[in-house]
Image (cartoon, rainbow, N blue to C red):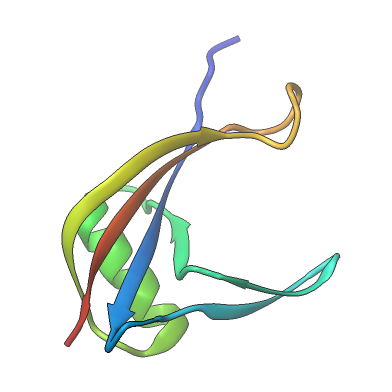
Length: 91
């Protein structure tokens, strides 16, 4: 079996000392999260995070820095996510 984590991007967006979050409906109820999503085939990380922010908020996002990279999974048998967290500003 070949291990293949899902590649994802997430944006931390600050404007006037406030942070942009999106409201999501989940099985646990309404949650707030950063704009985020999966890397599409043929996309690079910067294109993916710009697209995800625009799709989820209708804002145009300029990534400025990579804040971190994280491996996450809910439990040892579940899917692994390889998330790239990018910081930037709205245009």
